[in-house]
Length: 141
Image (tube, rainbow, N blue to C red; front, side, top):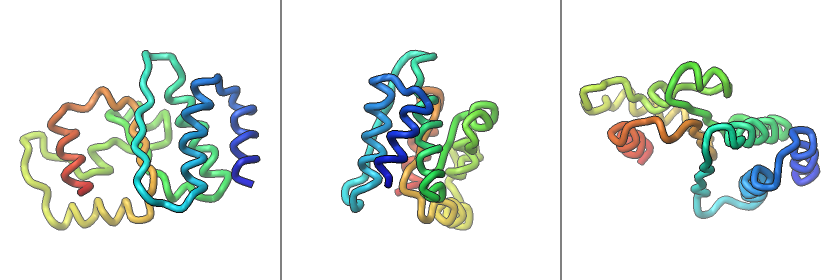
């Protein structure tokens, strides 16, 4: 059934060859028992369809009633709203621009929010600062 759902979405969303390739890497991975985490970067200039692939993946997991496995983040409220996600600041508890340590309470809330999440989709990943990427990494470890 998963493969049929993926095929339908590819056709409905008119994914091109490269978009389909990225889409299938994730959907195929989702059908096998979890082992090593999937770490994937979809690059390209603006307008190449990266967000289109993300929207197709959201549709795929929704069709399988597996939306709870997704965390969708973006660097700005506008970008997050366009993809139905949250800002990475909110999702990962990055609120202090001075670089302060995260409280144990906030860290617990972040980990609780991410309970059951198998896929984190980070739209506009080139926009966050190096310091924020480091904070995200430390909050997730």
